[in-house]
Structure formats: structure tokens, C-alpha cells
Length: 370
Ligand code: KG4
Ligand code: ZN
Image 1 (cartoon, rainbow, N blue to C red):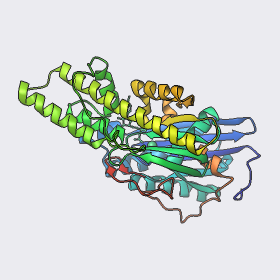
Image 2: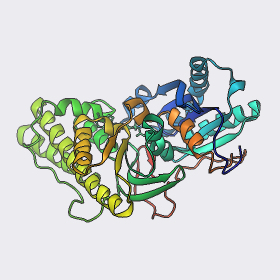
Image 3: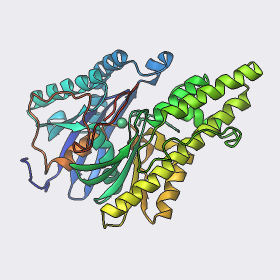
Image 4: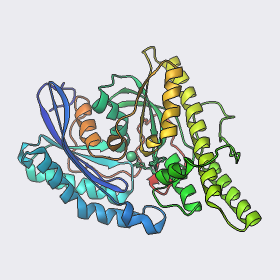
């Protein structure tokens, strides 16, 4: 396929993802009737990093190198096809933890060379941002909120290759803040689900936590001050009472979750207003990333969309978090615009989706942000 050529035939693509702590492979087929995921395998690394309080890049890279072959075999077996029936190999080429990205890119190059198939390096964030088209057939343009352990940004998706960044975090990603708060409270990782579980029995009004950057116009966000406020709150309680009681933990979790939810809701409201001013089409708000799995955050975002008269699209959790189907699909969606890569394709730790926006600040435990 050449650049600019529309997709007419059926095309079957193997996608590989290894930019953070999930090793994944998937086979996606696009035909005249639409797109189907024929096979998908994910090997999560949570257990490998559990004792270290965060993702250890060297451990992640080694595990990706060990598990990718297995994931590919599983995805291909599920798809019920032979490797030779693939039309192309797609791989996350960034942004992410460089050792992991290199591991995926090398595997993809090996497969592409051995099979004589075209190779496509995909931006991981484009994978997330195009997922609503895979799951819901969402038409351009739409507003995308990426909220995960490594990313937090508002983008207008104009086309498979044109994304306009409206704002994002200036420090931590919200998932990273959930993970740090869990660590401060001695709760298991990943922190998001632990905090959400405890928050259910907590009183969000007992402690007042800040709502960072709400006093500033626009839709940039900040989560690191919130985490520091939780640290001070915890230390103050320990100093006063000699320890933390389970109810204290639950109330802190509820207060923190409510602060994140309020900030994300208000900034999403503003992003939708900016979107409305820039684009005449009916608005759609799409969310992706692990933090979107949080029920009260998801409910708050759905409400914001409803208030603004916007459609709301939240892909199923397995396609919201890191996965390889989104990489294979992004390659397919971008094919009319992108020529295949050659074997000089390199792994990029940073790769902003919107090259015209100023670079974002901060670099969290899950790797450089784009
Ligand atoms: O999208 P994801 O699987 O991986 C990347 O970071 O790319 O997101 C993982 C992040 C973790 O920080 C995790 O704590 C957070 O998403 N997370 C949640 C919930 N489930 C996962 N945060 C809040 N509430 C949840 N239920
Ligand atoms: Zn991701």
C-alpha cells in the first residue's frame, strides 16, 4: 500500500505493544464490513514491579523481551491464521520506557524482515486516541481525554494523523498520583483500584484537599500538589493520633478521589467549551486510560458530556488500558496517510502527538510524557 491510497481490501495486521508495563500482541482485521480483533494477548507485569513501588525500566524491558514471542504466538493462534497471512506488522515506536519500546521494535523488525511484510511504527498515544474509532466507529472530529499512569491530556482528534493538544498535566499523570497516594497509605499497587475500593467506605468531606489549577484558565492540570497535600495530611494525623486508623485511610482515599474527579470534570468542561469554539460539528467526548476505569471519575465525565450535550464514548476497559489491538488498528487507520517504515525505524522515548504544541513538562515513574 502506498501513502494516500484508500483502504479497499481486507487487511490483517499484527500489532505489538511494550511501552510501559504490559506486553501485548493482537491481530486486527479490517474489511468492508468493519474491524474485528481476531486475537489478543496481554502479559501484565504488575507482580514483577510490586516490591519496588513503581515500574523498574530494566525489569520491564527484560520481561517484554521474554514475553513478546509468547504473546505473538497466542494472538496468532487465537486468530486462527498463519503468520504468512498477515499483511503488515505494527509496533509501538514511542513514547514510553525506551528499553521496552526497543524490545517491541526489534521484535517487529524481525517479524517484518522474516515474513517480507511492511512495518509500521505507531505512536502509542495515537493508539489510545484512535481507539473510539475501533470500538464505536466514532467519526472525526472528537475530543479525547487520555488519563492513565503515564498520560493526561486533552486532544482534538481531527484525522488519524492530526491531533490538536488543548492542554494536559504539567507534572504527574492522575494514575501516577493514585499510585503515589496508595503508597503513602501502605495500599497495594496499582494504586488506582486500591484507592477506589477504600474510598467507597470513606467520607470525602472529612478532609479538604486542594483542586489544583482550577484558578487558572484553560485545561492544563496538575496532580503533584494534591499528592503532597495527602502526604501532609497523613503525617499530621500520625503526629496527632500516633497512627492511621482504617477509617482515616478510607476518608483520605475518598477525599483524594473526589479532588481528582472534580478537577478532571471541570477541566473537561473547559476543554469541551474550547472544542465547541473550534469545531462546528456535534461534540463527542471520548476517554481512554486506566484512570477512566474509576467509576466515580467515569460518572463525573459522563455527566459533563451530558450537560454539554456531547456524546460520551468510553471503550471497554481492556481497550482503554494499554493493549496491542489499538496499535494494529491505529496503523490501519493511518495507512492512507503514512508510508510503511523501513528498518531504520527507531524507538522514541518522547513523541508528542501534536508536534505544534509546546512540549509538556514532567517525567513520571512510568516514563517520559509526551
Ligand atoms: O492505561 P494504564 O493501564 O497504563 C498506562 O499508564 O499507560 O493505566 C494504569 C494507571 C495506573 O496508574 C492505575 O493506578 C490507574 O491507571 N488506575 C486507576 C484505576 N484503575 C487503574 N486509577 C483510578 N481508579 C481506578 N479504578
Ligand atoms: Zn498508554
